[in-house]
Structure formats: structure tokens, C-alpha cells
Image 1: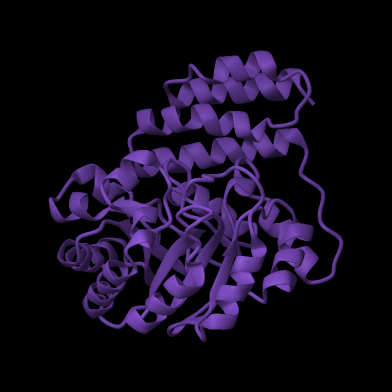
Image 2: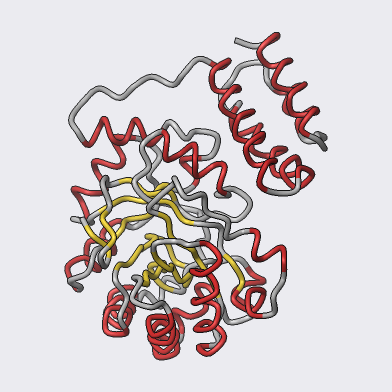
Length: 323
């Protein structure tokens, strides 16, 4: 399919996730078959105010494409300025607007999923960004609604399309649900039926089988994987096999998985502060060991790593003591 004029070769996308989807992790997911990825969400005000750390989040290697740069904010003028800056700094193929983040500090500022309570303002933000992106497509990620009594995804989707959005990603949970309970795939189906632009289904895609089922249930053009990719970039290979009607490949041996993890952090250290990489590795190394028997003591060691050498030592210990 195409989003605007950007061709997408595949039906599985990696969701934007703060502290997770940096350039290194996106690179590994592309290698496993992700058809589209997105940067971590970036503050529009941080960009406009020239914050160096904010800019670093937008790094996109030339070879890993197509990729979207995601920004968040609630001031149409600031968002327009940030949209142009985000694309200039990243060289990304498209801009994504976060209107679904449920985190308290984001919502309190009127950003993220708070915008679902003000569709008119959301529309103005989208229009301002579309006018600022020089023809590159603008997409929007949002939720089912604010809460169970305010489910407005279908109406919100129409506003987004009218404002010029080129594609929509719908997470089938309300803001108040956060990530609890089951995602409502039927609301995604309803959104798909209500608009003519591509729709990406998000929520509870943890396997190849789930990807097949969500696309069949919703009629969506793609599915998006979020938490299902934590420590498991190989989920994209399994999804692609399932969508092709082929047997899903087995998870690689633990030693190979740890080599992949180490490669991720080494690559990340070439592109950003190694200490920040180590802090992020504390949780991500544990994700790579999810379900591995007798890994508890090593996981406790992982949460204290503070350098690339510490990460290498942990990986060596895993390969030596666990199978």
C-alpha cells in the first residue's frame, strides 16, 4: 500500500515507544521484516526551543526506511514549526502526530490522548502540520476514546481525514484503560469503514496469529506492534510468515538472541550517549530474557549496568550460565 506517495512493502509496523524505539532497535526490527517504523515521540516545544536531547531522538539512518518522525503537542502554531523541523532533522519519509499517549504528564499538558476530547483543536493541529511538511504525508495515532463513556474514534477519524491526514493508527483502548484489558478491535473495524485513507490496527498484536486475526477482523491495511516487540524483534518475521500462510519460524537460540541484544546496544552507543544506552538496556536486557528459566539472578544484575562493558559482561554470563 501507499501512505501518501510513500510505498509500504508489508503489513507489520513497529509502534513508536519512548525509551525503546531508537534508531538501533528500529534497525534490528527492519532486519526482521518490519515494513514501517517510527521514532520515539518528540516534544514539539523541545524542538522549537532547540533542545539538544530532543533533537537526538530524531536520528534516522539513511538505510532504514520508510520511517516516520513522531511529534506531540497541542499548540497548532508550535506543532507546525516542529513538524518542519522534525522532517528536516530526521529526513523521515512522513510525520506522525501522537494523539494517543495516555501518560499523565502528557495528558495534563493537553497533549496526547487529551486531544481526543477536543476534535476541533486536533483538526487544526493536523491542518497546520500538513501545511508545514512540504507534501510529505502526515499520519495520526490515537485511541478508541477518552473513557468508556466517551468513545469517539470514528468521529475523530473523520476529523483527521478531513484535516488532511494520509493514514491513521488506532489503538483499541481508551485513555483510562491505559494498557489494561483487551483491545477493542471492533472499533478499529468501524474506523476503517468510516474513512477512505489507510488504517493501521494497534493493540494486542503479540503473535503472528494475532496479526492475521486483527487484520481479518478489522479490515485494516496494516497492524502495528508495540509491547509485543519488547525484547523480541523476531516477532516481525513470525508475523510475515503467518500473513503469507507459512509456518512461523522458531525463536532463535538464547545465545543468538543475546548477541542481537548486544549488537543493538553497541550500535546505539555509536549514535548516542553510551550511559543513556546503558540505562535503557537495564529494562531491555530483561525483556530479552523473558521466559528464560533461572534468569532471575542475572536480571537483578542487569538493572545495575551503567556502561557498555557492563552490558557485555552480563551477556557473557547469560551465554555461560543459561541455555
